[in-house]
Image (tube, rainbow, N blue to C red; front, side):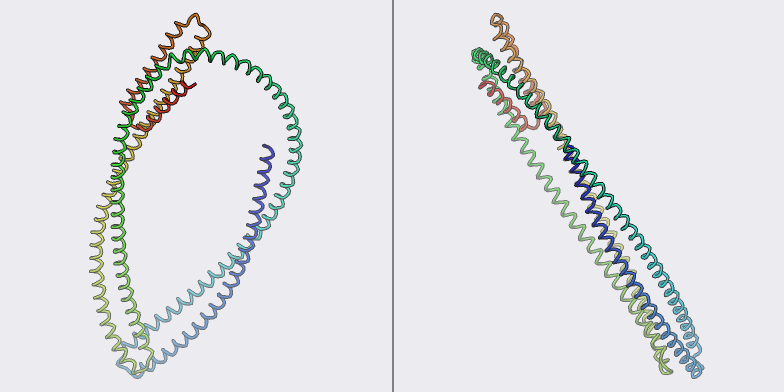
Length: 454
């Protein structure tokens, strides 16, 4: 046992060493991946900063050109002051957007720098962990060497104990031979007693035959009861199958309603997205119309008219969306009511299934109780049979008191018959698992037949 425990400890330590090696390799791979990601992020950051600078410079040039064009348009058209004010307001909005763009760029650069610092710190932590794993691996190697030395010492102790056990085994074999000789003597005495008890067996055979006939009649009665219980079980299984089919149909209906609801929501989202795209397209048209010369102002007027028309269309679309959303809410309410009804039906079916399961559990409990009763009856029968055997031995030893012993044996056989009668009454009143009782009766029958043959 010590050798097996030490070998198991050795196996666990070897497994831990292998796991530590694998973890160290994984940590090395993680460090290399982190280094590559740091390099990639730094290169991407520099590229993005350069691109943002180029974009900001081109944006400034475009803004200056637009300001020059607006000034020339203002000098040429004195009667268009309102539109010039609008253009100046849009210029202010563009400047504000530019400032916001630059602030976002600074934030992104600061976030990337902080992320690079965090990754470098993580790489340092991984390096320290790798060093700790290497130290632990060295310590485990030293522990393994100590275990090997302990194993060699234990092997020596085990050999000494094995030699002692061999000596004890020789002594035990000699004692066993003495016991075997004694057993042979007692066997001859038992043969003499068996010859004497054979005369008594013939007198008891008729009584046992009567008991077997009673058990056969009782078995026929329980076969009929068992067939009725099978019919009831088949009915219960059919009802459970029907309830499961209804549950599956209800689940399919619920999934269909959920799919229709999701499809309608997707249609409404698509309509909103199309409206937003139209608005963006119109805004782009207005911005492009502002970048032209004096002749482009006429296009701006037409674009404003179209924008007003499109805004009117958008309001109409929004009204339609509100109506459709109200319809969708009404449909969802109806579907929710249907789902509630279906859920109530499902709960009702689940309650019925629970009631059936409770009935089955109570049925099983009753079967277990009857099993306990049958075991008790069987143990009583065995004890009574042992009492009969003791009575036979006493009759064989004391032939002078044979009449008294025979009357005692008859009384014990009458007790056995009374016990069987009480078991029959208990089975008629409370036993439901006929198959179990039939098995027990067949076991009692076989035991009686074995006793006859013996």
